[in-house]
Image: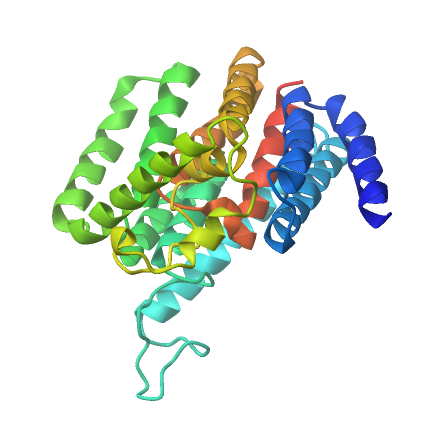
Length: 319
Protein backbone atom coordinates (compact mmCIF):
# COMPACT_ATOMS: atom_id res chain seq x y z
CA UNK A 1 0.00 0.00 0.00
CA UNK A 2 2.82 2.38 0.87
CA UNK A 3 4.54 1.61 -2.43
CA UNK A 4 1.36 2.46 -4.36
CA UNK A 5 1.06 5.78 -2.52
CA UNK A 6 4.70 6.59 -3.31
CA UNK A 7 4.17 5.74 -6.98
CA UNK A 8 1.16 8.08 -7.21
CA UNK A 9 3.23 10.79 -5.50
CA UNK A 10 6.03 10.36 -8.02
CA UNK A 11 3.58 10.60 -10.90
CA UNK A 12 2.22 13.82 -9.45
CA UNK A 13 5.70 15.29 -9.15
CA UNK A 14 6.54 14.18 -12.70
CA UNK A 15 3.52 16.10 -14.04
CA UNK A 16 4.78 19.22 -12.25
CA UNK A 17 8.35 18.77 -13.53
CA UNK A 18 7.06 18.10 -17.06
CA UNK A 19 6.05 21.77 -17.26
CA UNK A 20 9.63 22.75 -16.44
CA UNK A 21 11.71 20.23 -18.40
CA UNK A 22 10.30 17.16 -20.10
CA UNK A 23 13.59 15.24 -20.03
CA UNK A 24 13.98 15.66 -16.28
CA UNK A 25 10.40 14.44 -15.84
CA UNK A 26 11.07 11.39 -18.01
CA UNK A 27 14.25 10.70 -16.02
CA UNK A 28 12.21 10.69 -12.81
CA UNK A 29 9.69 8.21 -14.19
CA UNK A 30 12.40 6.02 -15.66
CA UNK A 31 14.17 6.01 -12.29
CA UNK A 32 10.93 4.84 -10.68
CA UNK A 33 10.76 1.95 -13.13
CA UNK A 34 14.42 1.13 -12.51
CA UNK A 35 13.74 1.07 -8.77
CA UNK A 36 11.30 -1.85 -9.09
CA UNK A 37 12.72 -3.60 -12.16
CA UNK A 38 14.61 -5.91 -12.54
CA UNK A 39 14.22 -6.16 -8.74
CA UNK A 40 13.22 -3.96 -5.83
CA UNK A 41 15.43 -3.82 -2.74
CA UNK A 42 16.94 -1.48 -0.18
CA UNK A 43 19.68 -0.24 -2.51
CA UNK A 44 17.31 0.66 -5.35
CA UNK A 45 14.86 2.34 -2.95
CA UNK A 46 17.53 4.54 -1.34
CA UNK A 47 19.00 5.42 -4.75
CA UNK A 48 15.56 6.44 -6.00
CA UNK A 49 14.91 8.60 -2.94
CA UNK A 50 18.10 10.54 -3.67
CA UNK A 51 16.96 11.15 -7.25
CA UNK A 52 13.41 12.02 -6.17
CA UNK A 53 14.40 14.65 -3.60
CA UNK A 54 17.07 16.01 -5.92
CA UNK A 55 14.49 16.60 -8.65
CA UNK A 56 12.10 18.23 -6.17
CA UNK A 57 14.93 20.57 -5.18
CA UNK A 58 15.53 21.29 -8.88
CA UNK A 59 11.86 22.09 -9.46
CA UNK A 60 11.56 24.33 -6.40
CA UNK A 61 14.59 26.39 -7.43
CA UNK A 62 13.17 26.88 -10.93
CA UNK A 63 9.80 27.94 -9.50
CA UNK A 64 11.14 30.26 -6.79
CA UNK A 65 13.95 32.07 -8.63
CA UNK A 66 13.93 34.33 -11.67
CA UNK A 67 16.56 35.57 -14.12
CA UNK A 68 17.06 38.57 -11.86
CA UNK A 69 17.35 36.67 -8.57
CA UNK A 70 19.62 33.80 -9.66
CA UNK A 71 22.53 36.10 -8.80
CA UNK A 72 21.94 35.09 -5.17
CA UNK A 73 22.48 31.46 -6.17
CA UNK A 74 25.68 32.44 -7.98
CA UNK A 75 26.87 34.25 -4.87
CA UNK A 76 25.99 31.31 -2.62
CA UNK A 77 28.05 28.95 -4.80
CA UNK A 78 30.98 31.39 -4.71
CA UNK A 79 30.80 31.61 -0.91
CA UNK A 80 30.80 27.81 -0.58
CA UNK A 81 33.91 27.62 -2.78
CA UNK A 82 35.69 30.41 -0.89
CA UNK A 83 35.00 28.78 2.48
CA UNK A 84 36.48 25.52 1.19
CA UNK A 85 39.44 27.40 -0.26
CA UNK A 86 40.12 29.02 3.12
CA UNK A 87 40.01 25.63 4.79
CA UNK A 88 42.24 24.23 2.05
CA UNK A 89 44.91 26.81 2.92
CA UNK A 90 44.65 25.99 6.63
CA UNK A 91 45.20 22.33 5.86
CA UNK A 92 48.12 23.10 3.57
CA UNK A 93 49.74 25.05 6.41
CA UNK A 94 49.01 22.14 8.78
CA UNK A 95 46.67 24.31 10.84
CA UNK A 96 43.55 22.20 10.37
CA UNK A 97 41.69 22.04 13.73
CA UNK A 98 39.53 19.03 12.74
CA UNK A 99 41.51 16.50 10.72
CA UNK A 100 44.80 16.37 12.62
CA UNK A 101 46.18 12.93 13.46
CA UNK A 102 47.46 11.87 16.87
CA UNK A 103 50.98 12.71 15.71
CA UNK A 104 49.93 16.31 15.06
CA UNK A 105 50.23 15.95 11.28
CA UNK A 106 47.47 16.36 8.68
CA UNK A 107 47.42 13.11 6.69
CA UNK A 108 46.15 12.82 3.10
CA UNK A 109 45.38 16.54 3.04
CA UNK A 110 44.47 19.10 1.90
CA UNK A 111 40.90 18.07 1.10
CA UNK A 112 39.05 21.24 2.24
CA UNK A 113 35.69 20.24 3.79
CA UNK A 114 35.33 17.28 1.42
CA UNK A 115 36.20 13.60 1.82
CA UNK A 116 39.32 13.45 -0.35
CA UNK A 117 41.37 15.45 -2.84
CA UNK A 118 39.29 14.38 -5.83
CA UNK A 119 36.11 15.66 -4.20
CA UNK A 120 37.84 18.92 -3.21
CA UNK A 121 39.01 19.43 -6.79
CA UNK A 122 35.50 18.66 -8.08
CA UNK A 123 33.99 21.21 -5.72
CA UNK A 124 36.34 23.94 -6.98
CA UNK A 125 35.49 22.98 -10.56
CA UNK A 126 31.73 22.96 -9.91
CA UNK A 127 31.88 26.48 -8.51
CA UNK A 128 34.27 27.91 -11.10
CA UNK A 129 31.65 29.19 -13.57
CA UNK A 130 30.05 31.38 -10.89
CA UNK A 131 33.29 33.37 -10.74
CA UNK A 132 33.08 34.32 -14.42
CA UNK A 133 31.39 37.56 -13.41
CA UNK A 134 32.49 41.11 -12.65
CA UNK A 135 34.28 41.48 -9.31
CA UNK A 136 34.04 37.77 -8.56
CA UNK A 137 36.56 36.99 -11.33
CA UNK A 138 39.36 38.39 -9.14
CA UNK A 139 39.05 35.27 -6.98
CA UNK A 140 39.88 32.90 -9.87
CA UNK A 141 43.64 32.86 -9.02
CA UNK A 142 42.66 31.45 -5.61
CA UNK A 143 40.80 28.60 -7.33
CA UNK A 144 43.91 27.90 -9.40
CA UNK A 145 45.93 27.82 -6.18
CA UNK A 146 43.40 25.42 -4.66
CA UNK A 147 43.70 23.10 -7.67
CA UNK A 148 47.48 23.11 -7.23
CA UNK A 149 47.05 22.17 -3.56
CA UNK A 150 44.72 19.24 -4.34
CA UNK A 151 47.07 17.81 -7.01
CA UNK A 152 44.34 16.05 -8.98
CA UNK A 153 43.60 16.38 -12.69
CA UNK A 154 39.82 15.82 -12.73
CA UNK A 155 38.96 19.36 -11.73
CA UNK A 156 41.64 20.86 -13.97
CA UNK A 157 40.41 19.10 -17.12
CA UNK A 158 36.79 19.94 -16.30
CA UNK A 159 37.55 23.65 -15.88
CA UNK A 160 39.65 23.56 -19.05
CA UNK A 161 36.72 22.14 -21.02
CA UNK A 162 34.44 24.74 -19.46
CA UNK A 163 36.75 27.61 -20.42
CA UNK A 164 36.98 26.38 -24.01
CA UNK A 165 33.18 26.28 -24.14
CA UNK A 166 32.89 29.72 -22.54
CA UNK A 167 35.28 31.34 -25.02
CA UNK A 168 34.00 29.63 -28.18
CA UNK A 169 30.26 29.81 -27.47
CA UNK A 170 30.58 33.31 -25.98
CA UNK A 171 32.38 34.55 -29.08
CA UNK A 172 35.46 35.74 -27.19
CA UNK A 173 38.97 35.95 -28.61
CA UNK A 174 40.94 32.69 -28.71
CA UNK A 175 43.78 34.54 -26.99
CA UNK A 176 41.86 34.07 -23.74
CA UNK A 177 42.63 30.35 -23.94
CA UNK A 178 46.42 30.64 -24.08
CA UNK A 179 46.93 31.04 -20.32
CA UNK A 180 44.62 28.18 -19.21
CA UNK A 181 45.94 25.79 -21.90
CA UNK A 182 49.59 26.47 -21.09
CA UNK A 183 48.85 26.37 -17.36
CA UNK A 184 46.98 23.07 -17.70
CA UNK A 185 49.81 21.46 -19.65
CA UNK A 186 52.40 22.63 -17.13
CA UNK A 187 50.20 21.33 -14.29
CA UNK A 188 49.94 17.88 -15.87
CA UNK A 189 53.68 17.73 -16.61
CA UNK A 190 54.63 18.74 -13.07
CA UNK A 191 52.01 16.60 -11.34
CA UNK A 192 51.99 13.37 -13.34
CA UNK A 193 48.91 11.34 -12.32
CA UNK A 194 49.25 7.92 -10.72
CA UNK A 195 49.02 5.67 -13.77
CA UNK A 196 48.20 2.60 -11.69
CA UNK A 197 45.08 4.31 -10.34
CA UNK A 198 44.04 5.42 -13.84
CA UNK A 199 44.63 1.90 -15.15
CA UNK A 200 42.44 0.49 -12.38
CA UNK A 201 39.64 2.83 -13.41
CA UNK A 202 39.91 1.77 -17.03
CA UNK A 203 39.70 -1.86 -15.95
CA UNK A 204 36.62 -1.13 -13.81
CA UNK A 205 34.94 0.73 -16.69
CA UNK A 206 35.67 -2.13 -19.07
CA UNK A 207 34.26 -4.61 -16.55
CA UNK A 208 31.10 -2.49 -16.21
CA UNK A 209 30.66 -2.43 -19.99
CA UNK A 210 30.99 -6.21 -20.15
CA UNK A 211 28.28 -6.57 -17.50
CA UNK A 212 26.14 -3.91 -19.21
CA UNK A 213 25.97 -6.03 -22.37
CA UNK A 214 24.16 -8.72 -20.37
CA UNK A 215 21.35 -6.34 -19.34
CA UNK A 216 21.65 -3.57 -21.93
CA UNK A 217 17.96 -2.84 -22.34
CA UNK A 218 16.82 -2.05 -18.78
CA UNK A 219 20.11 -2.27 -16.92
CA UNK A 220 20.64 -3.87 -13.51
CA UNK A 221 18.54 -1.38 -11.54
CA UNK A 222 19.50 1.89 -9.86
CA UNK A 223 21.78 1.56 -6.88
CA UNK A 224 22.93 -1.92 -7.85
CA UNK A 225 26.46 -1.18 -9.02
CA UNK A 226 27.19 -0.73 -5.32
CA UNK A 227 26.47 -4.45 -4.77
CA UNK A 228 29.16 -5.43 -7.26
CA UNK A 229 31.50 -2.67 -6.09
CA UNK A 230 31.43 -3.99 -2.52
CA UNK A 231 32.91 -7.28 -3.71
CA UNK A 232 36.70 -7.39 -3.86
CA UNK A 233 37.33 -8.82 -7.32
CA UNK A 234 40.69 -9.53 -8.91
CA UNK A 235 39.56 -7.73 -12.05
CA UNK A 236 38.93 -4.62 -9.89
CA UNK A 237 42.38 -4.83 -8.29
CA UNK A 238 40.89 -6.24 -5.06
CA UNK A 239 39.51 -2.81 -4.17
CA UNK A 240 35.98 -1.70 -3.26
CA UNK A 241 34.39 0.23 -6.13
CA UNK A 242 31.16 1.36 -4.50
CA UNK A 243 30.99 4.04 -7.21
CA UNK A 244 32.37 3.59 -10.71
CA UNK A 245 34.20 6.94 -11.01
CA UNK A 246 32.09 7.65 -14.09
CA UNK A 247 28.52 8.83 -13.56
CA UNK A 248 27.48 8.23 -17.17
CA UNK A 249 28.80 4.69 -17.32
CA UNK A 250 27.33 3.84 -13.92
CA UNK A 251 23.96 5.21 -15.04
CA UNK A 252 24.20 3.13 -18.21
CA UNK A 253 24.98 -0.02 -16.21
CA UNK A 254 22.15 0.56 -13.74
CA UNK A 255 19.41 1.92 -16.04
CA UNK A 256 20.25 0.53 -19.45
CA UNK A 257 20.13 2.15 -22.86
CA UNK A 258 17.22 4.36 -21.84
CA UNK A 259 19.59 6.33 -19.62
CA UNK A 260 21.75 7.21 -22.63
CA UNK A 261 18.67 8.33 -24.57
CA UNK A 262 17.46 10.56 -21.72
CA UNK A 263 20.88 12.13 -21.10
CA UNK A 264 21.39 12.67 -24.83
CA UNK A 265 17.92 14.23 -25.12
CA UNK A 266 18.62 16.56 -22.19
CA UNK A 267 21.89 17.81 -23.67
CA UNK A 268 20.38 18.31 -27.13
CA UNK A 269 17.51 20.23 -25.54
CA UNK A 270 19.96 22.38 -23.54
CA UNK A 271 21.90 23.20 -26.72
CA UNK A 272 18.75 24.07 -28.67
CA UNK A 273 17.47 26.33 -25.89
CA UNK A 274 20.82 28.05 -25.39
CA UNK A 275 20.77 31.83 -25.10
CA UNK A 276 23.52 34.31 -24.46
CA UNK A 277 22.05 34.85 -20.98
CA UNK A 278 22.68 31.18 -20.20
CA UNK A 279 26.40 31.16 -21.08
CA UNK A 280 27.60 30.86 -17.47
CA UNK A 281 25.29 27.97 -16.42
CA UNK A 282 25.92 26.26 -19.79
CA UNK A 283 29.64 26.48 -19.06
CA UNK A 284 28.93 24.94 -15.65
CA UNK A 285 27.02 22.11 -17.37
CA UNK A 286 30.09 21.25 -19.46
CA UNK A 287 32.33 21.34 -16.38
CA UNK A 288 29.94 19.04 -14.50
CA UNK A 289 29.71 16.63 -17.44
CA UNK A 290 33.49 16.38 -17.90
CA UNK A 291 34.14 15.87 -14.19
CA UNK A 292 31.40 13.24 -14.10
CA UNK A 293 33.39 11.22 -16.64
CA UNK A 294 36.17 10.59 -14.11
CA UNK A 295 34.42 11.09 -10.77
CA UNK A 296 31.08 10.50 -9.04
CA UNK A 297 30.01 14.03 -7.97
CA UNK A 298 26.30 13.17 -7.91
CA UNK A 299 26.97 10.55 -5.25
CA UNK A 300 28.51 13.21 -2.96
CA UNK A 301 26.07 15.51 -1.16
CA UNK A 302 27.85 18.84 -1.62
CA UNK A 303 28.73 18.55 -5.30
CA UNK A 304 25.37 16.89 -6.06
CA UNK A 305 23.49 19.85 -4.58
CA UNK A 306 25.63 22.39 -6.44
CA UNK A 307 25.12 20.41 -9.64
CA UNK A 308 21.35 20.47 -9.19
CA UNK A 309 21.45 24.21 -8.54
CA UNK A 310 23.37 24.74 -11.78
CA UNK A 311 20.87 22.67 -13.77
CA UNK A 312 18.05 24.75 -12.30
CA UNK A 313 19.86 28.01 -13.11
CA UNK A 314 20.40 26.81 -16.69
CA UNK A 315 16.68 26.12 -16.98
CA UNK A 316 15.81 29.59 -15.64
CA UNK A 317 18.30 31.45 -17.82
CA UNK A 318 17.21 29.53 -20.94
CA UNK A 319 13.56 30.55 -20.64
